[in-house]
Length: 133
Image 1 (cartoon, rainbow, N blue to C red):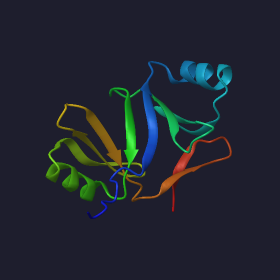
Image 2: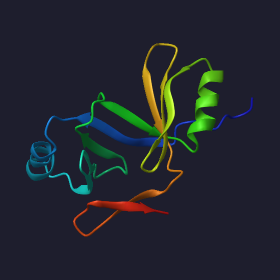
Image 3: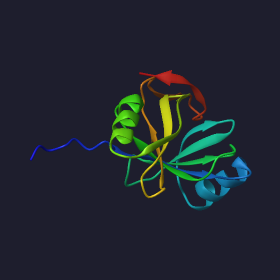
Image 4: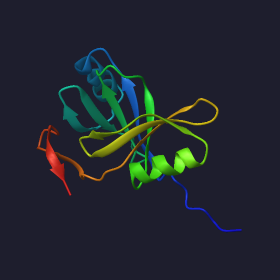
């Protein structure tokens, strides 16, 4: 039997909706000790110390989610659909690349992203200032 390369590379982030970013940073950073990796006007990424995945806090109008990193969103969408899943949204652009929302045959939402544009570049205070290769 031919071994198939797994589609998901890793958990990129666990994303949580919060009504107030500053209060959430006080809770998760100041009180629980998670280091701020990057900050943007509506979101911030915090380090999960035994992983390279992030805890992302956001004020955007979208649900909590787990984002899976893939090599290429368009290729992963095609593969997912051929396997029996469906595309709910996307692919659409995000700061670092492309993203899509999928659903497996058991109605589980699956969010995938790639880093086709690069990674976030931050200043000395962890504010997002662009994209790095």
